[in-house]
Image (tube, rainbow, N blue to C red):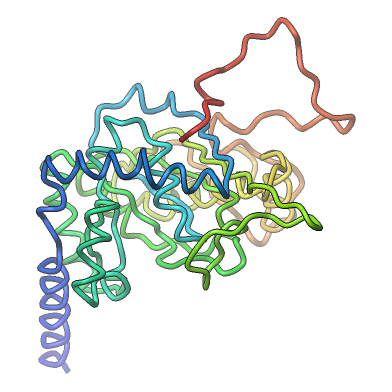
Length: 322
């Protein structure tokens, strides 16, 4: 039994090393990065604008950071990657590698090369165990060269647009490197380009059509003190995704209420992880909502939002992407 376990572990390490060998490293060279920036700005972004109205919120959280960081985002469409890349400021986008499933994008070299060139992807094994850890070693070495990494911890695209179970790889990588996690909530891409489609679509309303509203929201940095915090950090990231998974144009507070109705949250001081991270409870009734981070605002006025004319506009947080 012990010898079999050793063989399985060795095989897992070998799979992980084979995945790392699939990496198209020259796609991160300066000439390719310049060409990629031009392609995203002058070709891909105008094409996406035919089908989506994109908005980036809370990008100011990045101004306080220097990097590298681990970006984690919910995943429900192939549009998520280009939408997030266009939402990132240039200095972050040019040094961000996107973790892509090796068994999906790197099975054939004729697909792996253009994907790596256009989106700056790097292969990662979606399996767990030694193979998954070996893939993290490859990302760890990349972060040692001051690269940020964008990961989709669900492991695959959501078919219904909801948020699935999160895997631990991104949190383990952040804990190993002692770098912050930046959660990114993306909404609207599942309607514009759901799984199974190879090209976006416009929203049909009778004989007319209009663009889908797509929103990218950056969350506050999350520091992982040690490996004991992994589950608490995953709960916090999941709650952030749920809170902003409000569909097309619905307020984020409505999503938070829906999430609280489904799982409930414990009051402050009970069931909190290290650093005051709130832990979700599936057994207690949802009596009230607890702030997971500073973003969760007051309950919405049932009569509708009120806008003060003398209030300054937050131009940066509402800046249109594209």
